[in-house]
Image (cartoon, rainbow, N blue to C red; front, side, top):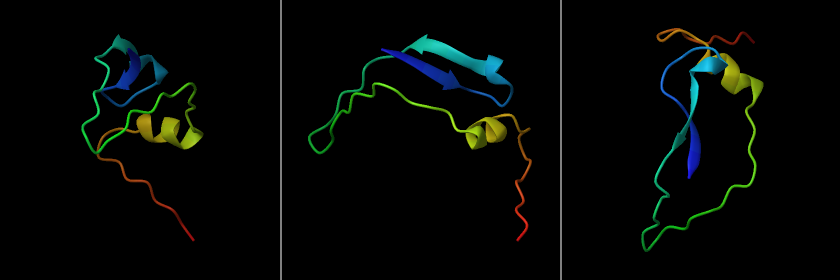
Length: 59
């Protein structure tokens, strides 16, 4: 099956489309088929940070 993976921080160019083995569920697990997904702006911002940076939220 195909999967998009991110192995490092950076711009969208660090995302890679790769072929991976289909997971095999064990006796107490189920396998769910995903037809569509999305990336939230928060995911993009966190992925683009440099390692070690901390997000701060002010109240």
